Structure formats: structure tokens, C-alpha cells
Length: 296
Image (cartoon, rainbow, N blue to C red):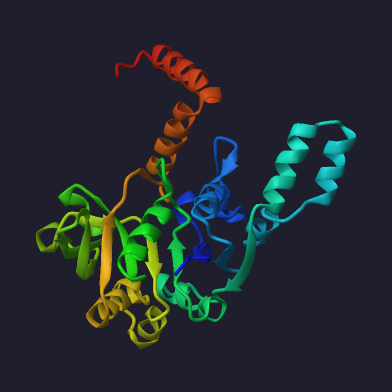
């Protein structure tokens, strides 16, 4: 089964980026000259997705506006003969078919995904979290699609190895490695933010999933969990008891842009990987290190 729809939850308030997020959605904060949300949407598009579903909240209309045509701006750019910029803006406004659903109350990731049920219907779908950016040769969502296809279109969660001391920041999985694929495991269970000594492994998810529509059944059954929210982890545990569920160690470098440190790391890394910004970034770093008499 081809994955044609992806859910991107963007309803959060972005409190770790205040005061910038007082009026600006966190997902619209740029990495270099592109907002974070564009990198996520491009991952979906490059994976073959045809429709993006934003689970959003009031006051975040800027995300929808960004992926729509801005005829006033386009007219201005045309009059000023700024044709490269004009084509770039047109492309962004036409790059994706999207729909939105409002999450009236932020009750957790599980609740956010459940809000999209009517727009998903009875097909498999992807989920990408908007504040986790991953640089990879092949989009991570596409990597998961391939694993799902090989394994009879079952659910797949993307995982990465983490330092054992960081387990309380993530959902951590347990499972058994497949004989024919050392990067893929049959998922047995998932624990939400366990203490290091109680973690079942050092394999954690940074927010890439493929689900069968059966996940909605369990999202409706779960009770409020950690933090008083409806935890996706609880629904995953119920689903993997009824049908095969897989975890895949994806290839790529992940950046948690939901916090200041991760955002700074992503900005530097993205700049160094782009030819037109690499030398500028290196020059700036060298200059500042010298100016402040720092040692690296």
C-alpha cells in the first residue's frame, strides 16, 4: 500500500522559544532562509506523499498562509523584475496539497493524531513531527515506507541510538532484530520517557512513523497518561499486541529543533552542508572565535 497522506502536528505553543513564539508559530522560525516546517514538508513530498494534514490550533494560520500563493507579493516581485524570487515563492505556494484540522485543546500527540482520523480514512498514513529535522540521503519517511512495504504494509516507527542517560527524553522501544534485516526490529513494546535504569534499550524515536488505520481504534481506547495527556506510546503498545509492528534504525542525522541548543546545531550544520553558505559560516565562526579569544 502506497502512503499518500502524512499528518504533521503543529498545534503546540512553542514555549521554549518565547518570546519569538508569542506571535510567530515555532515551525515558522527559519533555519538559514527556510522555515523549519518547509524542511519537514519537503521530506514528505520527496517520499512520495500527495497530501499533508496539519493538525493545528488557533493563531497558527501563518503555516497555512506560507504554503498558499501570495498574489500580492508575486505581483510586487514581478514589477521589480525579481524573477528568481518570484519563481521561488510560486513554487512554495504550489508545492503541496494540504488540509488542516484544529486541535482545540493540546492533549498530547495521541490526541493530535486522532484529530486527523476523518481525513485519513481507512488507509495507511505517515506522521512527521515538525520540530525534528533529519538530514539524510534518502528521506527518513521513505525509508520507513520501504520497510513497511517489505513487511506486508504494517506499521513502522523510526528509531535511533541514543546515549542511555537521555532515555527520559524519548519514547524508548524493545524488540527483536529481524534475521534478514539487521536495521529492523519486530516491536514488542514502547516506554514513554523511562529513567535510564528502567529503559528497555537505547533505541528511541525522534518522531517518524507509519501507521495502519487500526491505530485510531486504540487512540480512542487509551486513558490519559504521562503529563495528563493521551500518549501515542500507549496506543502503539496496544496495536503491537494485535498486529505486527516494526521499528527501523533509519540512516540520517537528526536535530531536535524544539530546543535552543538543537536549533543552533541545526543552523550551523545546515549552513556547513550548503555550498553557498559553507564558506560564510566558517568565516563567521573563525572571526568570532578570534574576537572573543576562545579556544575550540
